Amino acid sequence: MNTPLSEQRYDVAIIGAGVAGSYCAERLHSAGLNVCVIDKSRGTGGRASSKRLAANSSDQSVSQSCELGAPFFHLEDQQLASSIHRWLAACVIAPWPAADQHDQIAYTGTPTMSALTRHMIKGCDFYGNEKISIIESDHQGWRLLNESYQCRLWAKQLIITAPAAQSAVLLSGSDAPETWLLDAHRATLACSPQWASVVTLTDTCNTMMSPLELDCLKSLPSVIELDNEPIARIICDGDKPQRTPLQSRWVLQADQDWSQQHIDAEAQWVSEQLLSCFIVWLNKRQDYVFAAKDFSLLPAHRWRLGRHHAFLSADMALTADSNNRSKMSLDYRWSQSLGVAVAADWLGEGSVYAAMKSADNLVNAMLAST
Image 1 (cartoon, rainbow, N blue to C red):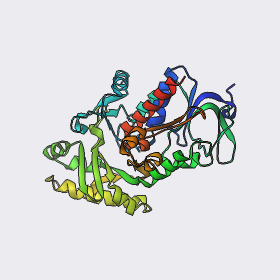
Image 2 (cartoon, one colour):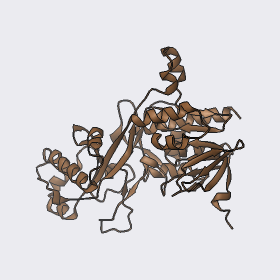
Image 3 (cartoon, helix red, strand yellow):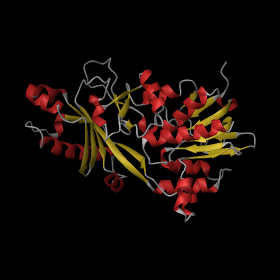
Image 4 (tube, rainbow, N blue to C red):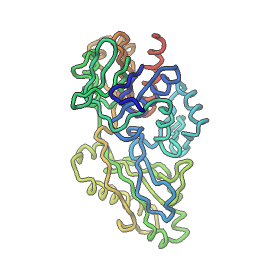
């Protein structure tokens, strides 16, 4: 008989099954600790999660999914090179040269981005659809409670990897240092929302186009950065490695300023605006003239906590000396005496790789203290 969740005990509990939380879980489990990951969503990945789509193809056996948040990440330095090689060997990521940036190699999850986070937590207990609203220290560990004040589980140590706004809720009223809460609030103010949608060329349109026109469509770049509201980036999802490009499908990521202006708009209206802009852009590059009827689209997805940007931490704000500021600019928070830590992209530069580095630096500090 399985032990009820409320009676579970762990060495480390991690709130958040995104990239940072999953990375912490992989490293700590490898070090021999009993680790669990808990998330309010059903699955793993956070902004790197994959959205399952309704199958439009005649081949119903093929899974249809795409990423509306973080479709790839860059190896920004060599700190995590060994992890990259390990994931490549496990076939859960692959290079995607189309998304390379300057001298930085791009990688994407295979067959989806969330395959990476699922791989990282595979040795740990995962609890989805569990929203933790309150954390309490009992001086021997941490109790994780839901909004009804029911204890869901207990752990000796706690790591929070949630977005800044959600981390602020958890840190408020806890024993964690007050500067951590101030940092979470500052990072929340430096966070931008983002709308995203996916459009697919209809089967009818596919049959109407000539082979030459289809070839021209397939020759479009896989990743297009635009400076043209409302779209900021266009991604040809089927061009990613180890994907089956059954249909021409694009993810349209909206400009963040435009997303902020229309944060409370109807999702269907947002999709239509993004599609209209996409068609104008596409028709400038094709002999075939596209119209809205040539595409199927889903209501747009809104990332309220779309992208965190670098911010000045509370400790840094109180320090006038720029040299001391650079020393204090850690991309994680860790209190050994309290047994609580924070790792997240918002403590760095806001990227997927920043989330990984934050988690890596935190785990190195935790393991060095044992």
